[in-house]
Image 1 (cartoon, rainbow, N blue to C red):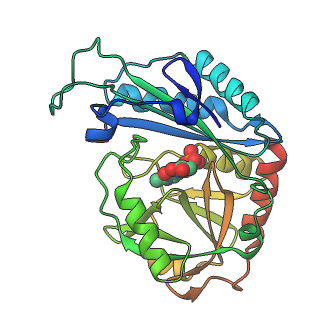
Image 2 (cartoon, protein in one colour):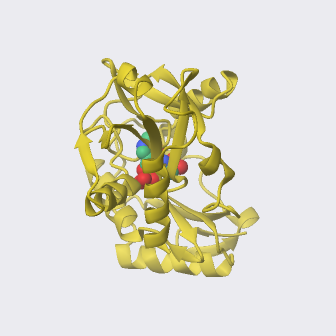
Length: 279
Ligand code: PDD
């Protein structure tokens, strides 16, 4: 694989990052994941805009403009002959002596990109079956709207789900579902799609924004508000969205079947619309 590090395209085994990198020492970095279908980047503008926002919330300088970033994404997709998969991008505050205070403003940020091939991403068998989730308390920090690389708790959540024989975990705070470990969470009751409102408690999903726009254009009813686990267990359908799963039906929550136990109509329709419009 060819990866991109600080202005250079290199074979992955020649790419190097300092042991003093603040991404490594403090999780002082942000990231984006953009999917690639048919060799095309999906929703790149949204991911680029969110990256700039994450950087500015952390007072981090952007090492590249959104235009440069697009060119790097395209070059990496081409060099790796990626037709279906993901592009991962990470920017950290750079390497500096270990200090809790941010280093001097002239410290060069670190920027890394790599691709991950995922053949069959659009046609994932899980989308036909649906996934199982468990609920866990949300023990992340309070600025989940910033896409930082501080992913240990979501990683623990995935392990808890695996140990319970499930695929993912929905996180619950103050009695309401925030989101999945790496996706936004939705339920459908009657003909209404319900998903948590935006705020500092969840990541503002790029796929979420696209799916809600498509739902509105298809005259589906959407409510952006908190929902409880009780409501979720009693829903007709459930699903999640992310750049790496698009729209993924949820068929079981905490061991209880949702709706008929098969992927719901609304989730299936939204997945179809999303993939159609993206391609
Ligand atoms: N995760 N919520 C969380 C906590 C996430 O980590 C993600 C994305 C989302 C969905 O956002 P988007 O639609 O912009 O991908 C919601 C990525 C895919 C990841 O960490 O791999």
